[in-house]
Length: 465
Image 1 (cartoon, rainbow, N blue to C red):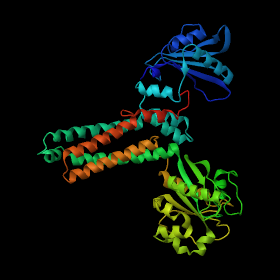
Image 2: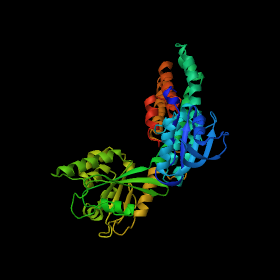
Image 3: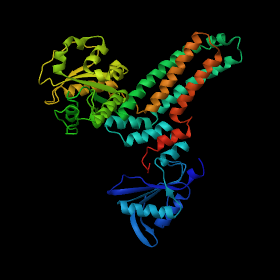
Image 4: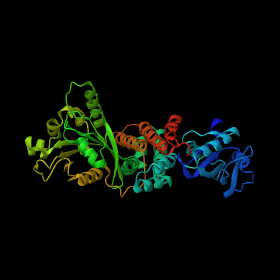
């Protein structure tokens, strides 16, 4: 760490507002000395001391003081916790005194950042702390705790160790350019690559599941005006979150509501009705709806039962998805055509008005609901979660988008190396693919980390963590 990073830092570690207990944390050199200037007693390691907090002969508060000497602390430095009353005025007074006596305010996530830089936790564990704090369900909290305990990191490290062993075999062949293919064959590089690719795919699947459990699934409700998108949003939210009228074009911007279904957080996004319009404001809303189609994990195309009847039921069983999209969403066909077919869910609304013919088999998921009566909504959300996550019961650990992207890169590089080996390319190219894959694994746990990546990760933390 730089000299700036080893300053004595302080922060309020409990949430803003009033509470029974407020915790102030100190970390860095002279933490014990500064704390003892407030409590006027000799601190014993890892023991709770009760004392008033005094500055300039004025009692600011009273409570418990704990000292955790480094390196046996969360950050690896000397850490002090002042556990007083949870009033913002009192806590801010103590923070001001600490700053006057040599501390400075911590940056967001700086305590966890120091724990990482001092080797107390790796980068995945640091991110798991934030995921644990922000968990929206028991399943998400358990998965985050699993990551914090090193389950994800250990799998990444084990994969990296196996890849490193392969790199040794491959790079040994570089010194013998005339015999490199024979040497690679003798080292069973092809079989090892195949095994590594299979392991990476398994880990990638688990990481994607963990990401969706931790960060949730974004679901975009799209369709023509007046098909009931806002009514569906309100029914799912359990409140009048969106304005509902019979006037087409009422929804002109994105409206997002967070719900939880079976332990899986969903962010449902209501969008403007897809149509050509002369209204400049509505045109912006339609464009945002199209953009949301490209960003969402799942796109729910909402149509009415009357439309289904009017456009012939056989369309719902057609193998040509583009035919259905041209019929029910002509204004967004180009955007929807880029979405994977298994990410599109057809939602037939207003079945209380018209009874559409139910098809036994479909080439894409179809649900029948009534936003007015609530019929079918529970089955719809259950189906959506099952397709979106594969179920949350088997989630092993929490993960983030960057972890998934790194593992996808590892898989692609190893597959490229495998293809190169089958085509007889030189050992240098195979070694380079393996080196880049090994580097990508290192970026997940933080053994290979750019400063800007660390800054982005820890800046999302709360101040006192």
